[in-house]
Image 1 (cartoon, rainbow, N blue to C red):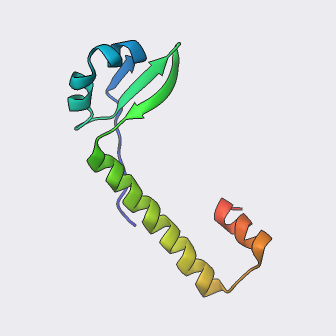
Image 2: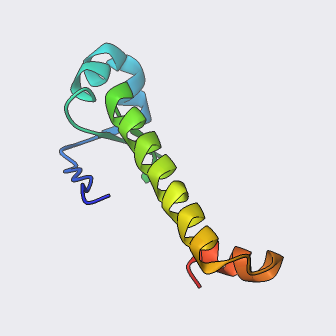
Length: 88
């Protein structure tokens, strides 16, 4: 997995603004993530379905790599396996 995700955050909106102009922000999310704030705090990120699918692909590849490494290293037991998955 040499490819990295480079997300440049260009747009930040309030939840009210998102609600009032949902279509506009759905279109904007096709090219850039849209950060959604509520009560002054970041609550969500709106991304395109293509970017979401890409993230799922990366996640699947990550866990496949972890499984291959665990298989290569041998079974470690429940606690040791949990530590390995946590990156400890």
